[in-house]
Image (cartoon, rainbow, N blue to C red; front, side):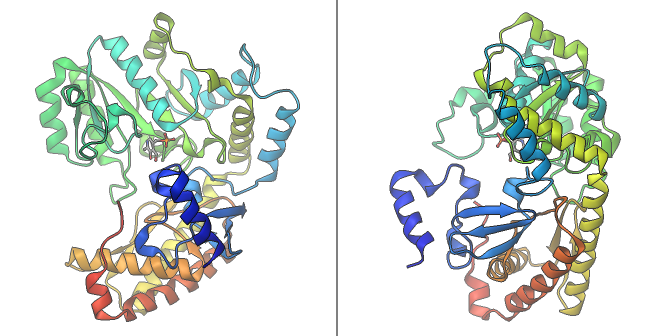
Length: 415
Ligand SMILES: Cc1ncc(COP(=O)(O)O)c(C=O)c1O
């Protein structure tokens, strides 16, 4: 038995699913190849409990934009640690980070910090409700685990039924349904909250721009959930890339290279609602993450990090197209360069899903860690990308060579 199997067995007895978030559990279908624990990371590489090295394209579910153990960020944290982690009054560095965000993120007239993506989203919804004095919201995309966002998640998930009267879900990208729900409920709606991009093929922001037009027409606030897209697609996120304009927006994952911080920000008129109600949480001004965010944003600006991420993403996409062609695979590179993917495109959806599964299984074996989208960090070099493509080609060949029986029985793996 491998050490990680033993640990996992014991972890399952003490920790539900053996992990803190479902997304980080080892998917049972990958049992033999997916690492169960990550011990260490440096640059764009990670190591599992057995010491196996992987080129990482998952980046801690998105946040590690610069690279693991990025010295300048970690040094800023160590310096701040000498002064203290948390105080009972504001720390002056909060203003420094607010200034940076004001300069880099569109519509950031006023800014506050939180710890996670979902609490930034919840804060924005609270503001929208307080401002409009309406209670209902429409949501589109994943916004976090809290009750408000999980009304349609799964049965018996502990979310009260009554919430369904206050939250309606627009399937992401469905313009007709968005229009129907907005027209039907507009008098009760405080806001529409939506992700601007689902990491798929709407690479010009058509859906989010349409939501912007509709919400303006009906006097409803638009909250853009930039938790994935902020500081990843561009410094100012999808607002900058697509030129779409949020009333309020939430940013989190990529802003501090993995340190836990998020921000909710937006137009002054709406943010000023916060003057009139209580919004208080102990760890929101925790200084280590603020120091990390300041360092991360300064590096991103100074070194044009997103130019590099885009260039490496384009190189990866070219590689996907080349190996698909060489191996005669019906598929192509899709998405935007910072989070691209190889889309298997035969007319048989079940076959495509199984091929994707087999490919990922073999990628783990090769030492490439990825799930669905390939996130690029500033630490990925041309050499890393080329090595990954070589490995991806070997993995794809093995996926194609899988026993037909195996190909037909494997289930798609997502949840
Ligand atoms: C778009 C989006 N919003 C919100 C969240 C929730 O963020 P967190 O897990 O930091 O609460 C996520 C997490 O994956 C996300 O992708």
